[in-house]
Image (cartoon, rainbow, N blue to C red):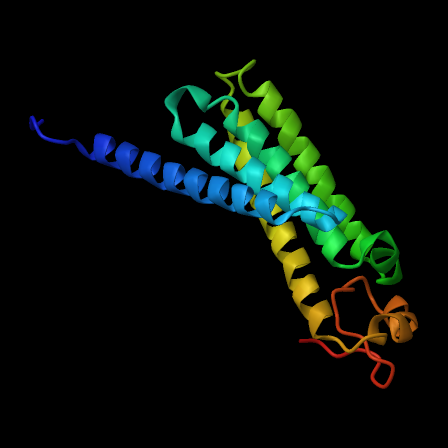
Length: 190
């Protein structure tokens, strides 16, 4: 071993720098959003998302925060999920799109399980299966949230009223309901 910087120390320093930079960036975004004012529920959710992301990044950066970081990550993801639901038009718009409510529910369930695993983590630290389960839950939540972001992007690309006019065509299709529906064509996939 050399007297210089070891590989582990360099990786640890790089991880700290990345998490600390993210914490500072999201703290700045939180302050900026607060100064601009938050009147609507979506703006409050955005502010909460910025704040919780800053907390998660800081807890991930400091060595003592390793047990709290998974909890902050779960709460952060739940707030971002709520923001996606709000931006997609709220509960009514989600219910009009066949199957989309199930995706939101499944992602919410995965995030709830991730929260439970994060709470149990410090209690049963020696159990390797819990760590593997937590990693699988994180991957599943990330994939589900990406599907919902894609749905929001596709929804923003639709002309107004296309989702409600073509909703009956979507209900008659298989559960791959993250499709683009229009009144003229039953199903058109992006």
